[in-house]
Length: 314
Image (cartoon, rainbow, N blue to C red; front, side, top):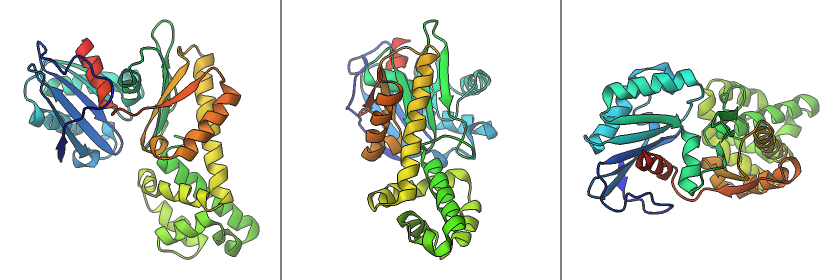
């Protein structure tokens, strides 16, 4: 567990004394960030790997909510309002389950949202589209009636285009197709195939397929930086995959606009998007094609700032 003071990004009225303590939580696929602002204005932050308390997918084990509540309670046992942004919170039914389970274990008023919904408040924007590209990938917006709209977020096994696991999945899939068409030796000449074979300590495309299939989809994500390493080395496979991911992300955002999502700014976050300028550049290029009215703003503040903004607003 790491504890630190986070002072970047827009500040809700929690730098000064408040009537009651507030808590913001950002539960990502990789890490969990808890921030507490006391009634005296003092702030404490803790960041832990989500795997420290989460067992499997969030909703596969209801005890995950009890363990998350215990993590929050360790930092602050008393507060008035808490807002929690949850990775993999995709349906109204899940929202109801999460709110009920967390309210059983946490004092005060508990509000649960998808973690992507923290991005706009963290950027200081009330009306925007929100895009996370990291362990998963989802685009969110709201229409004139305040109804939530989403695109993708279906999981890395079948979708989540642009996410870390999906980039690995699609790059290896493309390399394997090339091996079938041109032969294994030709495929290994692609920097992407060579890098993945080295990462999995195998020599052939067939052995790589076996090694990858032996892992869970989310485990693939740790190798996502290799896709961009291969891209910079001139890999045709990696280049095609990153281009396709950017195109799908842009199409998803354009679709939200057609469906009524409000805003002209896309606030983007997530470990892949924030760390890879090549993806940012390609996404901006595809937005100019599919949704020229939209501009991408990569979030520089921690998403937990958005949770604190929402908690402070009540």
